[in-house]
Image 1 (cartoon, rainbow, N blue to C red):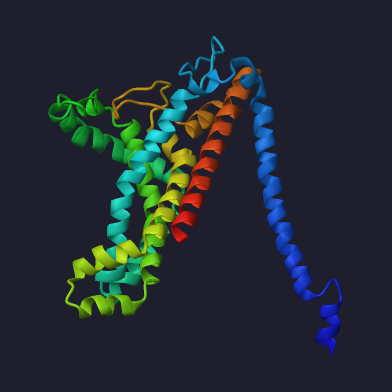
Image 2 (tube, rainbow, N blue to C red):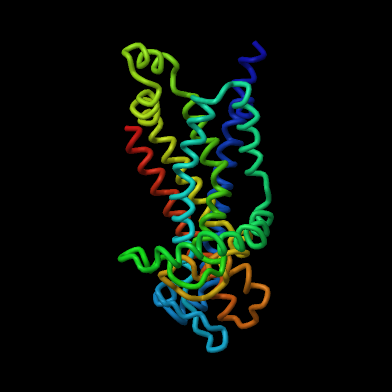
Length: 311
C-alpha cells in the first residue's frame, strides 16, 4: 500500500531517478555546447583576421603575426595514424594470446600488468621517449634506415634526413605505447564475450586453433575492434605532454617521418604561457577548436558506422 502511494506521488524513487539521469545527460550537453561557444569566442579574432585560410595555411610566425593550423593539423593526424597502425596488430595479438593461448595462471597477472600501463602518466612516457627511446632509435633504426631505405622509390622520402631521434615517427611510436593498453583490454573483453559453444562447435567440425581464431572469433568481434580503435585514436589525437617531448616542436610540414614537427596539443602547450598578443592567443585557441572538431567528427563517424554494422 505504501509502495503504491509512493508511486502515485510525483517525487517517488523511479521518477526522481529518471529526472536525475535526464539532468545528467542535459548537463553534459550544456557543457559540450559551452566549451564549443567558448572556443569559437576565443578564436574569433584569428578566424576574423585569416578566415578559412587559418585552417589551410602552413605559416606560423609570432613575429609577423601570421598564423595557420596546417602544420599542427598535419603533425596531429600523421602521428596519430602511425600510432594506430602500429598499436592495432600488436593489441589484437596480445589480446588473442591472453584470451585464447595463454595459461590461466599467467593470463591474469599479464592482463593486470598491461592495464596498469594505462595508469602511467603521459609525462613519464614523454621523458622516457626523449631520454631513452629517442637516442636508441636514432643510433639504431634511423641510422640503418637512412643508409638502406632512403634511396628506395616511393617510400624512400619517408626515411630520409638526419637521425635526430625526435620527430613524427618517434612521437607515433610513443603514442602507440600509450594507446596499446586501451586496445588490448577492450579487444580481450570482446573476445571473452564470444560464447564458448561457438568455439566448441568449430573445434567439433575439425577446425584448427588458428582457423577458430581467424575465421570465427575475429569476425565475431569486428564491431568491438573498430570501437576500440576509434577510442584509441581519440586518445592519440588529444595527447599533449608525451608528444610535446618527442615530436620536435618545428613548425614545418616535411615528408620525412624522421624530421621534427609539431601537433595541435604540443603547439598549445609550448606557446600558450608565452603568448602575449591577442592574435597569438586567439590562434592557439583556434587550434583547440580544430582539435575539438576533429575529435567530435571522428567519434560521431564511429558511432554512425557502428550503428550501421549493428543493423
